[in-house]
Image (cartoon, rainbow, N blue to C red; front, side, top):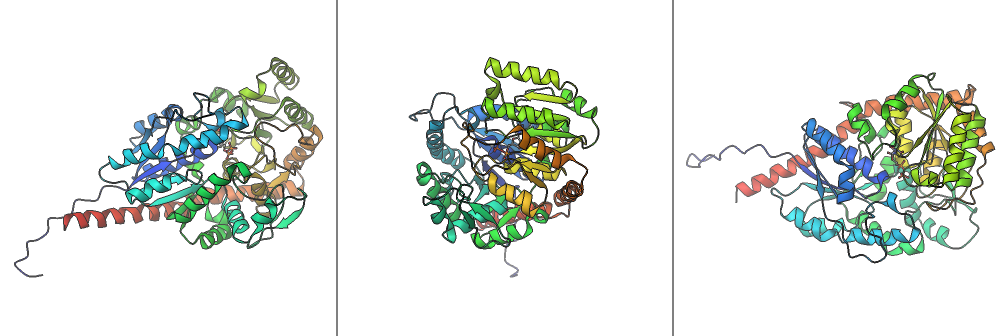
Amino acid sequence: EPASATPMPPLPPPSPPHFIIVPLIAQGHTIPMVDFARLLADRGARASLVVTPLNGARLRGVAEHAGRAKLPLEIVELPFPTDVDGLPQGIENFDQVTDNTHFVPLFASLQKLAGPLEAYLRALAPRPSCIVSDWCNPWTAGVARSLGIPRLFFHGPSCFYSLCDLNAIDHGLHDRTSAAGDEQEKFVVPGMPVHVEVTRATAPGFLKEPRWAALRSECLEAMRTADGAVVNTFVDLEDQFVACYEAALGKPVWALGPFCLSNRDADAIASRGNKLGVQQSAVTAWLDSKRTASVVYVSFGSLARKLPKLLFEVGHGLEDSGRPFLWAVKEAEVAAPEVREWLEALEARTAGRGLVVRGWAPQLAVLSHRAVGGFVTHCGWNSLLESVAHGVPVVTWPHFADQFVNERLAVDVLGVGVPVGVRAPVTIFDDENVPVTRRDIVRAVSALMDEGEEAEDRRRRANEYEEKARMAMEKGGSSYENLTELIESFRQSRAVEANRKQSR
Ligand code: UDP
């Protein structure tokens, strides 16, 4: 260095990277992204969750918990767009929808958040490091591009599903299964490292109905132009699928989960998702009174709604199974007085053995309780992963979207599931013609919970995944170290930017 050069003042330490997280406003999408935001904040990165006011109100518990723990996590509320045709006032979340015709306008209203998001981001100094937005929020792509901020997409399903979907598009399977034909015609998903068979009815493809065509192509375009993907899974669960998905996408795939294990204390678990329909302590006390791994937990996620006919079959099936059960039913499912009366009679007949939760159940607290030994699930990816991460094998009863492909993963690949035997999807509000009877439920629950060799094998495998999930999230584990790498890569780009500014 020439003697005459004035030495540069030492650089201030770069501020921690700042992630802007834009979830889709449906519980199955928001919950994992909130967990992800907490993980980032736990590790010293700044995380801002962008939502609308109603969803912000639901996250108050998360914000308060973060405040108490002094985590750099904040909730940012953008006003919900009001000028959208066909959407009743007050609907800001997919779980409030009561009519199939509301879905398209709800997505249309989200597109209108692009302007307010861009204005909010422009006003931030320093500039945020990265946007992580849901795969179904393609409108964030334009915002990221116009501000020059890197963008990762978060896709909710398993990597197994996402890879099936991508291969179905890239190898023409999607075109074949979209063409008219026998719903039960079988197809092999091309390009998969294992044999995966689907039918026309259960073939992968998010938003694949014709009314979604425009949105789907925007989502695919936003996926192709993103800088990478964040997925809620872990390498020891989906090793080859993560690797193949990364190769097929041609960009980094960050496997950082299971995100649910970021909820380390009772406080965080209680504030997860929604206002509980029941006292958590009452559920825990009831479970405490049960033998280890004896209880079947039953829930079909945040969206699927059962009509009375099927609800009754579930109830009778659980009663006839003779097993202790904890069943989460939705408020909307028991709105009619005759359904309420029927449920009360069931509760009376199964008193001491069955517990029915009306409304939002503390799912993580339930699945992590030693008394729970099986889960009848719709195979939403969060539920399936939460189950596996707690060593709980499943009865699989897929309803729609990625759930049928997730069922194949649970049953054929991971070996932790017993199918209830459904062969075609339903819409959220209409399962009138689903041929599941109480006998199917008794058969599947008995197979799951009995002491036979197959059941023991499923239990053993689930327990192994639980152990591996825990290790993945601990220091030195694959997900922990992947997150370190993700955060560091943005810390470095911040430092480069700060350097550039200083030398100007
Ligand atoms: N969940 C919960 N209590 C309920 C219903 C659902 O905590 O009563 C949570 C569940 O733990 C999971 C999410 O809501 O994290 C549902 O996501 P999933 O992908 O399983 O299904 P979706 O709701 O998207 O169909």
